Image 1 (cartoon, rainbow, N blue to C red):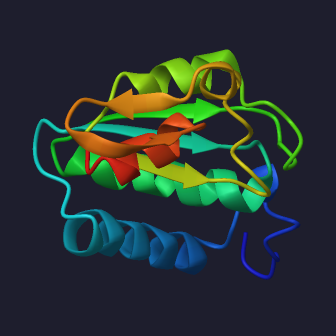
Image 2 (cartoon, rainbow, N blue to C red; image 1 turned 180 degrees about the vertical axis):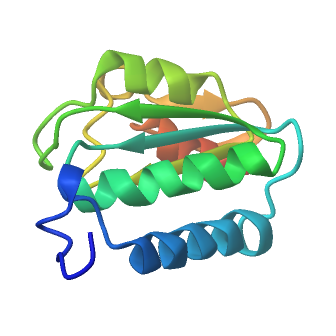
Length: 139
């Protein structure tokens, strides 16, 4: 394989050095920035676009290596006017300890929250997207 570029390598994946840098960056993000702990549920939502999916997969592996319980959900790219897949919203509604959205554009609107905004007892405010609701309520 010597002399081959990334685009010439079988599978067309990133060069090994770039993959190692991405894995290390994901490890730092999971361990030091997000402080993910053993046993925590981590939901990662991404798109099939190569770059965001590679980042999401690296975060998934770093969370797994940390002893967390990661789930990776891949939905087609969404624009600001598109709805998120129902499966994505249901996964977020399970209120995992860690939510990560690595999207090429947008996560997508929450049709359930648009219909009936989210509220939490003892917390002021209402939200039309579960992602924002969980953050706003400090969950």
